[in-house]
Length: 294
Ligand code: NDP
Image (cartoon, rainbow, N blue to C red; front, side, top):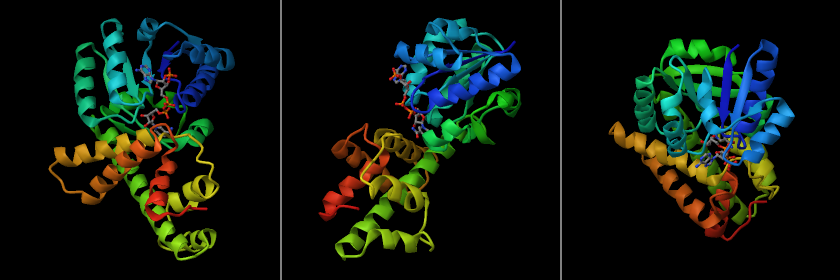
């Protein structure tokens, strides 16, 4: 029997761990869960048949999944568990983390005989609930092959390179989300000021070359409806764009558009609020243009 463990039952982790539980039931494995707010882990155990355990017991697992806000929280958990981990275990970090942290964490775990994979995910809470997430994995491909059967929350798994490559791809992907979201918001704000109906404008853009996930889904479903459902925090998107800027620096590259969007998202995070949905960043554009996107 393989013991799987999941740490961090947030908006993403909770449904991801539910898919692990389903997979475990079908294959005779068990799933341990731990969450900082213990009531969420207890509720997960009740609902999905996982086992809510004290943090130290997570160290007994063969495969440990983490899905926490940033690499800093993963560091805290790793420090608490490191001396108890089982040699041969694999640590799969599904946090949208930092590539520099991945290198350090992989070295650290390696000394304990444990392999680290950075394996951030894409697809949002809807993708997590449906078990259709895209997983971008950095690290040892043999370790990925060993854990691949357990990635029950995935629709697509891509090995993108060595340690840290998964986090790097995720940061760039989300910086691109920031670019399309922000730029489409700007475009619609000026169209609104020009008196154009925004629904009609999006109808055209979505049948034309300006379309994106922001124009097809995020803005019509979350902004024009004024719902801004908080499924992916603005603070987390700003963090991801900041990681893309750090990556630019570390490879001595030049990515001024990504840097500008990271700046804008940081400003929006401060003005609009950390915990608001990422699409609420467009409220800052509304203020800048004295208009409402509806
Ligand atoms: P949430 O804020 O919903 O959940 C965060 C989780 O981390 C909670 O379980 C929280 O515990 C736990 N946590 C926070 N701080 C600590 C700490 N100091 N020690 C231990 N546990 C802690 O975040 P998401 O699930 O939205 O995001 C998780 C990761 O996934 C992030 O890196 C994010 O960027 C990424 N992501 C998010 C997507 C989304 O659509 N939401 C999509 C793709 C990736 P508690 O319950 O006690 O607060």
